[in-house]
Image 1 (tube, rainbow, N blue to C red):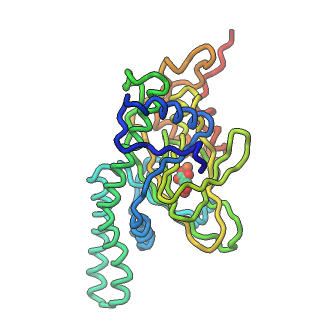
Image 2 (cartoon, rainbow, N blue to C red):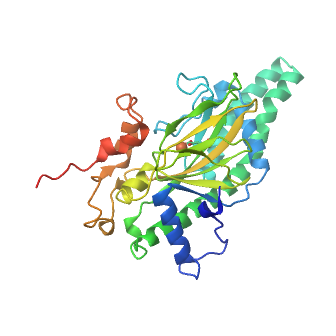
Image 3 (tube, protein in one colour):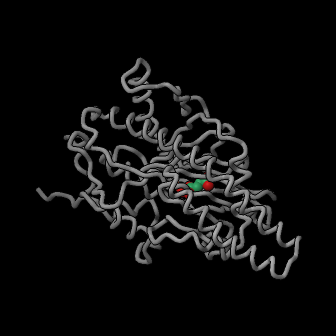
Length: 335
Ligand SMILES: O=C(O)CCC(=O)C(=O)O
Ligand SMILES: [Fe+2]
């Protein structure tokens, strides 16, 4: 991404220090005009090699990654609309207990498998099946450390957004979030041709920090309708505005449409840390975002009602970017 849309957030940046106000303004401009920007970061190289191991687990094990909340659990490959896509979800991933229970779930299954394998001992099968899981256990620490940093990063960006609207003194006007980690695999399309492997959508949470492993694929649609492929620097993240930030900012922040397109013969891996408001949150724009020039766009709504609607059969055929407007648009006042 060009330097215009790239920020190197200083490690020791503190609210109110010299560079803070300038960065708040740039973050707001990027979120309002483009709905995204790049955050320069240095993801540890082993993170993706460990994530690859996770996808090598047996399907029955992966299916245990169940979470009834929309967009929180495991998505199997080979589905009708997303045949090349597979992903895991890990709720509250900056909390070491969540990561531990996820690893333990895999571990318990492994123990059963090891016992079975020991009974009918077959060394080749044994190492093929156990290596990925043992590797993933080693990952827990890496994931936890990463997610704590991403939570902090997401919090700093959230504070900048709040301050950019002059709401710094009113932290209660913003939402309390947890981090949902999603790790994605896109299998190289067999045709090798340029193929949509991740459908066009806007994110349904507040925001996302996305990182890809060397194979570019993320594309965004600019406000004037051009599709642009992003080439973030290796190990860096792209911050994406989601529907809930659009609603919270009274329609000022732009939930950018994006998709994943790829060609070639290499599988693509990516990870996303999504900022999700805690259950029970009512999404409402603070009064300060509403004025003559910006009349209230959305009515207040319950987070889970919106997520359930966005994920329902009823809304399946609706353009992802329109769902928020259909669900929560404020009825026009008849004067
Ligand atoms: O894989 C990517 O780079 C994008 C994933 C994405 O947009 C999503 O999971 O919402
Ligand atoms: Fe997305």
